[in-house]
Image (cartoon, rainbow, N blue to C red; front, side, top):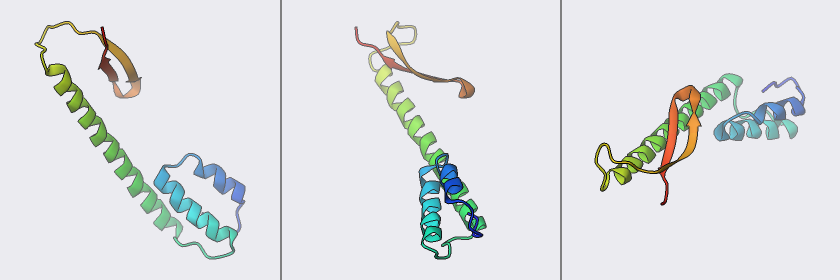
Length: 107
């Protein structure tokens, strides 16, 4: 955040592309700035906190994805052998990461 009176509109634009944790920190500083109070954090503090929060959010997403994959593998493995044919529906793809998400289709 720029403490020299940078445009609040510019600060708001930057908030739109941040993670939830980053937005909370930035909004706190923006509120203080609008109220004419000093910011609660220094720029370096905010950058460090935002980076840490983003890393933790990424780690949580990885764990969640692994749990979902494990649960899907468990469900698919019940009553199935390698080579069995199963109907699936495409749920999502992430080409840049090489992911293809499928779910078992009914019928």
